[in-house]
Image (cartoon, rainbow, N blue to C red):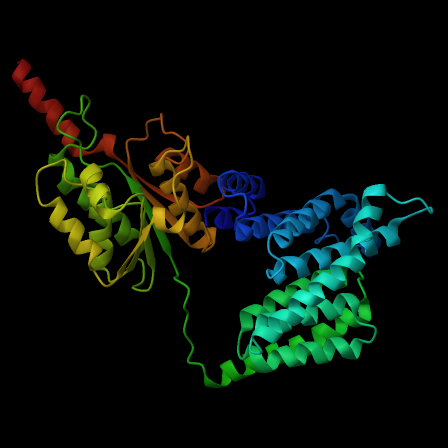
Length: 432
């Protein structure tokens, strides 16, 4: 999941590192291998997709073919592990067909790259294998809409008549019902093929039938839908200090500062004025900043997404119950609130890789999940002393990333609280 968020944010290199690390522990994880292949494909696509000149675009796509080959090889790897995993097979076939097309468009003499020639020799073999996989899938389950859609993709690559493409997709649409997501994904893929001038008549036949279905569905929605903005207008991410443990040598957030911290958080939320359908995100429910922020958001009828690095019992022990007061009771009120969704890192991301810190990983997870809504909606509130020393993924790193992306940061500087002035005055009086 972390790799998914990274790739959506165009942080491809980091997403690849995450997946390769996972595959060291789970070398036969077909879903991870296939997703890695899709990232290689997206990386290759970004090298040419936005080039307006047709000829320059084709040249750029071919010149970055090393990424395309990497994607093909990775899909091959997944398909070899399980030939019932037909999506990996059809993707390998499609990309291999594109590579063959680009090589023919760009070759200037009869000599072709040996590696590309070797890959193209696999085309006929792969066509037969994928066709068998797909036909077996629809024989096993005559309602498998995804397999029938893949047969449409197969026809785009192999059909001898564009009408075969139309028939294949129309058959799939009888089973697909109202799945706009699949339609849009397939149309997105076909748009890429169209830009590369890959089998134009066949690609256009596919686009025509699928676009007509998508237009029909969208028209139906316009007729019956009640206007509703489902996306939150603001997404407010919080990061901040916990209450100091009793044995903390240098005070940072003493318990006596709770009231002032709550007031400062309320003031920032009043300034941002989030609507009731805005979303709040917190990387924990720790005593101190997290709980104060979440309680304030719930008073405003906001929905809350919480990301926890551990199971609740361990999290409470490490981050809530070590100080006196009613923090544990407040934790459970938040956890059991109907407007709060709890996401557990072990369930969603798996075990922490060796050498990583669960808290740093959790902060990155919360940050990437927030950024998925678009930086223009994001507001980061930090209850923070502004001091360095944060490891990657800490509060300082959050602030830096959001600012680099052009986001808005509301810094509640705990070093400027009245509490410290009062303490200083008390110390002066004692000295006198």
